[in-house]
Length: 162
Image (cartoon, rainbow, N blue to C red; front, side, top):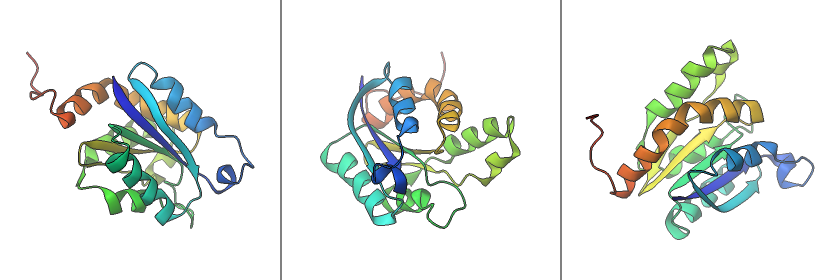
């Protein structure tokens, strides 16, 4: 079991003006992978997002941080920039796989700027802001997450299939 953190980037959600269904969708879909150790809604602000990612990775020692929202082209969509500011290494295959699968459903998937990367032994993945987008993208990455997290934590060493 892994420790999981969820960050929702939403100006309205942070003010209590909108229910965070996307964050709840993430929590429900990951119930078999681990425990939600920290969940927060922050405004679409680079510093607030980066600060929460650092707090979860460095101080709360979560294994996986999933963000939702702020990955589009809007002027306040800064989640990818916040993520890139705090990761040590990018994991481009995760975002590429999510976009590729999403493109099968809508050509608007090409507008996603989501990224993924690691900070120490924590994997950070940006997900879309819509509950439907969250579900579709998590379905793509979930089959590989347990193995990827085990490797990142040093609990597994081989990716080759037997």
